[in-house]
Image 1 (spheres, rainbow, N blue to C red):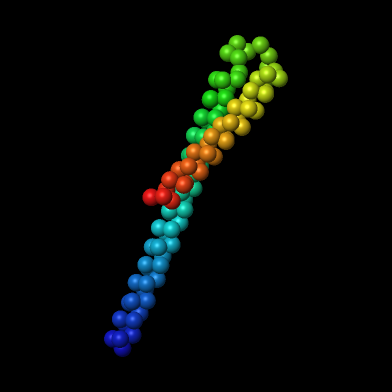
Image 2 (cartoon, rainbow, N blue to C red; image 1 turned 180 degrees about the vertical axis):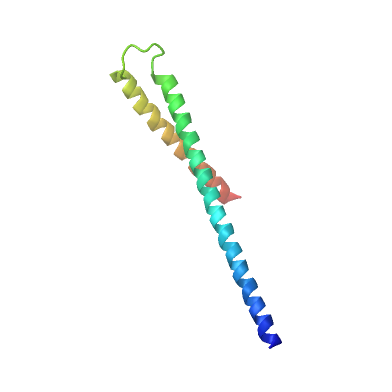
Amino acid sequence: MANSNVSSTVEKQEIKLDDIRAVLDKEKVIGTTISDMEYRVALFNSLTHICFEKCVEKRYKEGELHLGENSCIDRCVSKYWQVNNLVGHLLAYGRRGL
């Protein structure tokens, strides 16, 4: 009888440990997702600020962008993503070398 009580207690502790691990894993996933979203928002805001400052005239003449501004923004966004990808690859390569 005492042996079954010990076995039951051990099983309950294992279940509790599994529950704790599941909660910690879930919190880790949520934390990673939040960090990823914060990074993406910061990246988008940086891209918007840089390309807007570079390409859009400070005195607004019209409600829409003219052809030159559109072309400039297209090139700016393209270059921004190319550099961002290059830096990401270099950082990933650097981590593998450590």
